[in-house]
Image 1 (tube, helix red, strand yellow):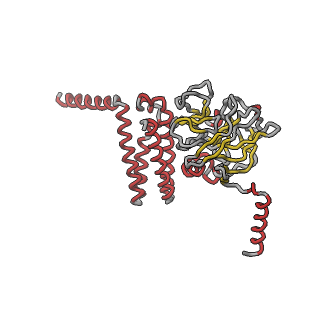
Image 2 (tube, one colour):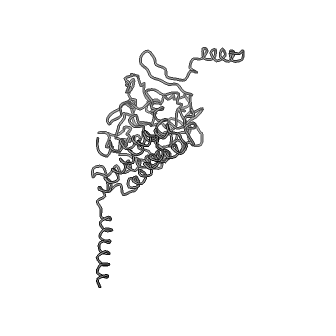
Image 3 (cartoon, rainbow over the protein chains, first blue to last red):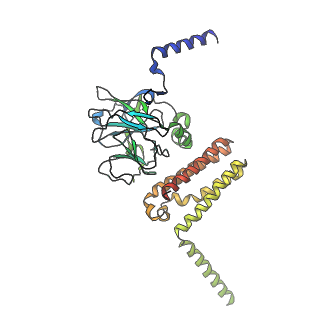
Length: 241
Length: 137
């Protein structure tokens, strides 16, 4: 190792030692928490203006991509407060705690929009996964107000960490960890639970060529802000059973 | 006279064949297509296992010839009655089959056999995904 490389290693180690949160990766806490930290990004609208929590329409599915340029997530302002400290389990048996939604009444939640069963997700062409408002029926579950993947009819509990309510899905949707700032803006800082990102990147290479000019661009990490739009604008066609 | 009679008989036979094809039960068309799809998948797999690009390409061509019936609106008429409502899902599966099979051809052409076999895996995944849904596995 020459002198220049030695200095780089020492400088890098010093930065990490001073601020360990710079390490991005899976952090397994002693209590079984499964959490991956990514760059903190602000949720913004199409014009780039920060989204205010109070401006979200109730029971509407919004989409933003995080932590990668191609990994879609759902943002929903639920009609009632979420449950708290929900114990969830990944398909590998890892247990973790989903604290609650954010916002004034703890009604705002965000989850990965990649179904944990067979990776169904919204594309620009269509979406088979979405939140089903309370006044709309679904074939996937006995009551509405849940997230439904209409591909194979899995239902997830939107107010309890997206735990599986019915259908073939074997684990909850990964949760996007949100922060609600004092100025009413929303930020996303990490992913809680078992995500399916690597399977997703492997499975949809041709789709990434079509929509992102290749997998490398699809895998680019989101930085600074995440554009957040209604699902009805994100996908041309919504299919919900 | 004899020639005219023969011509009329042949014309009649021709017309009845045409009509028979038009009135063919949509479900039997689907079953035929499914059999051809199975053959095409076997051919692609054989091509992959025996390192035969020709077999892989021929299998893809055969497959793409059959997915038209699933891509069209007519898919409503060939699905089981209790699954008619899910025609958009069948159409989506067909679109994905088209996407992966097109990519498989590109991968084979460029000599990227790992990618080609991954595309094959995804084709199979689409088949089973649709069968789980539509056939209530």
